[in-house]
Length: 584
Image (cartoon, rainbow, N blue to C red; front, side, top):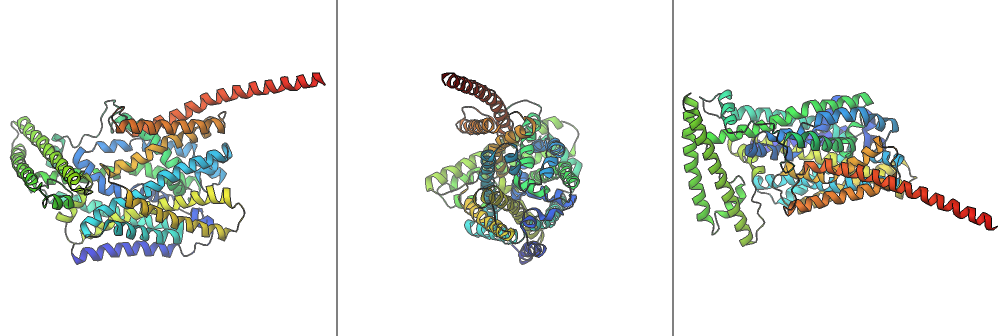
């Protein structure tokens, strides 16, 4: 990287961390550390919620997802506005009425301590893993580009987040996220127009979109019902809605963002703001991925986007085989470019040219799969740890090779800021749950506010260390953005089922709910394992709906059984007492 890129990168990071520490200098109570003195306006809440969800994984992985699969991933967010409206109507008023620090406090009021602890433990488990993943995601990319050791990169990013999150809690997180979101959006808009400017002069935006449409990159909605298909309108509106209800309604990393609002109305507006603007933002990121795809239709694309993998295999005994694939790829690309130019410069026989283009694309995909398999074979033979999937490297590979000096540093800062933003929210939420739902409730009920503030900061630091350790042992999934959603979906359906019973089914008691939750979680784990071995294939988005339905249905049936048993036991006790009275 150029010295200017380094200056931009470090200036932005230092500015964000310093600003977070400065805004947190007045934090002197547990309430202000965990809830920010409930003084956050709606627009800050909205930006903070979006920044919490938009981790580095979003900006690393989503363009690669679009490069490979087009705009279909945007369907994933179609259930978000529905979830936001439902939460504003049914959930937020209850949280504000009870004046809770965490979502799980409500569960003890409704059920008992066991349900509160069980649900909070599920949150800590999945969010602790996710925190490690949000550090790991940018680290694998930045370590490759900057030449740093992966574990060193994990530690640096983790320490930066710990510094201002321990200092200022919710205030530091919310205030820094405004600047982080601003940097993110500016970087994305600039990137889009730079890619557009790099297309050939005779290719307008409309030409480019027509070309992408012919290659099926602009298809957003799939109406076919298929539970094994990750992205269609049904998985989005059913599974996706339940995922977002669980994430925004029960996940403390999000609940904590809107509980810091000035009022119930401010928090509701913040959630609706997120529901309104999240889909356009995600679509813009996907469009950048499509634009990168179009760029490579006119320029030479690498056979494999992970440069570290390429360097490794080109110095191995597999070098000749890899080189042969590269040569074949160039031939296919040249043939495809000829067909593209003909289709752009004539209105005749366009269907024939489109068939040639699509045939070339299919052949390119075969060659890239062959390259991935070759890398995997080399990794097995050499005993090295190499990840054959490269979609997460598409965006970072493009910007480091094709963008101007200065903007590269800005976009790398965008990635690190996104990582810091999400991780900070997660650490803050993990600390709140650990301190409020476990330490204060179970181990030390009566202590001074300063004592709890100190414990909250210790918990934040401890979870930061755990997140760094998790980031060092997490392996790269096929796609990072799918990985983080998959981890959430493993638990969110069960958690949502517990909360749904709490809000809507007043006759179901704690014992039935706990048993239903255990059975529900076991069901999801079983489906996940069966899917791994391809015995039963159910895509992860459906886990949210299935988990919720299993918990509610099982708890309802169990409540009827337990209630009947209670009646029988009561009748038996009465008969026994009557017999005793008669004998006397």
